[in-house]
View (cartoon, rainbow, N blue to C red):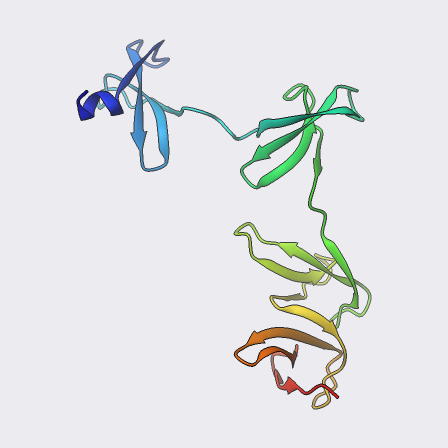
Length: 180
């Protein structure tokens, strides 16, 4: 087999733009379908669409609260989630990883609690649960306590060469806190 045969495989499906045959090609983001008359026709489409999340497992005995069909575990662009098996007719979804709430009060608004969240890049951070009213965010694990130097009502825990250490969460202070 030649190299070109590995990268252009006929799909036996007509191009919706010009009617020529579609071929499977390989690009930097994986395989895709493209028109065999490229560059005259520039039609392309992903080979497998994961936008709606492909089904990993059917959750027997659990039913959609909207349409009463079975719920399924799906793998989507942003991780695992639970959705209705009747998608796209029913678009009910449920989050699996709910934010972990801490018992620590938000030092900025004093009303909300800090919750652990995950960014779209997979990094863990902690923010106030009354977002968008309060936009307090920290990237290190919060620890209940008060800074002895500036009396800021929150400490953070960081890994250092000497092990886990606590620091003041205030950006102006940031001093290490010694354990008593």
